[in-house]
Amino acid sequence: MEEVIAIFIPIVAIIVSGGALVYALWAQNRERMAMIEKGMDVSEIYKKRPGNPNSAAKWGFLLVGVALGLIIGAILIHYTALSEPAVMFSTIFLFGGLGLLIYYFTIGKKNGKPE
Image (cartoon, helix red, strand yellow):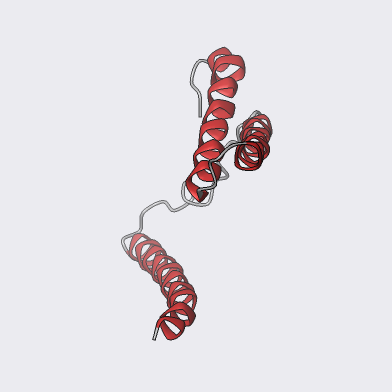
């Protein structure tokens, strides 16, 4: 019975995710069509949003933090009595969060409004 449930979990997750995406696109299309029917200006919808020039740095700090978390977690599991998967997950989240904090204090504060 557990094998059947284990097989259906990813299948259901993919179907639900796809359905949510299709529904979001359908709702967005209905909203735009209603705006066009009412004669509203829809040019604002299609304008490109300005990107953050520092987003690559933010992702870089985050991924370096996650990599450090993986390395430190593997070291802790190998050299200590800690063998729980929670050790790996906690170090990944800890160092990923530290990477984002380092981004905020180095680059984010310079811009005045961090992303």
